[in-house]
Length: 320
Image 1 (cartoon, rainbow, N blue to C red):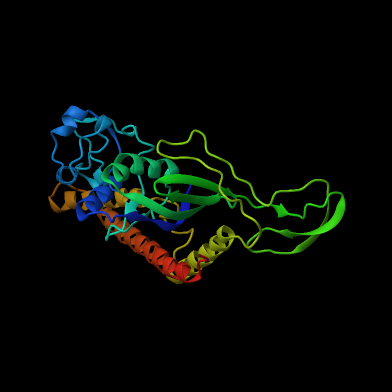
Image 2 (image 1 turned 120 degrees about the horizontal axis):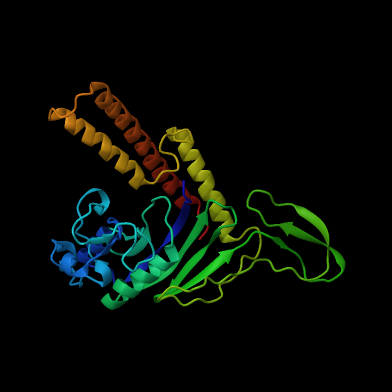
């Protein structure tokens, strides 16, 4: 099923990206990163890359002209379909806004190696093009304690990990009061403290990806920290939105990525196309494919609408 992480916020781009660079970075995120024969890939049609003057890159890593759904068709240049071209993973899900002012999450599920990917974009594209990123993007994984913040200052990346715990005064061997650091349950407790307990902790990633400078980030200080509040606001917003649209865990596409869903739709369309050209003989198979396609599209629309509603709600509630 994989593991999904949600992201909140965006990084500003200074100066703003040109339309050609916006188009390239979007195409880069929308095509599968596969190891290629660079010499063969260089001869393939790739106008979006050509428009920004980029070379083909190591193992054809800068190529974005692939055909098929999400650029996944195999051609003679592909060496390894399941191995990225010297890149963090098969998919990059950081994309520019249409106006080129920000870099943000594409709202897709199961985004892996997200810190490494923003470092890659800085190193290979943004910095060489003369752009600087600034701002903060928070993340929240499926595990409640998997949350933190990616802070970027003039292309220098800092990673801070939040942690739920207990905050106590520093008095030793004394009965004192503390606060339970959770978003939904704040209560007073009594405990005997043998030694100071930190309110939060910071863990630095290893190894640090290229282009990323790891520094200690400020720890979460108490139960009203920005990360905790925003996590609670997002969970409430997405839960309400999903209930309103009827999208839930019973959905046939629940837990699946948009790519997996679109791939399934493609197969159904191929079945219908085969029937239309007289190649299919099993009418029931084609009928089932058509019905399934309608269901999948309906569920995909519910999920997209739910995320759009939740995003609007979250923006109005987010703690800045």
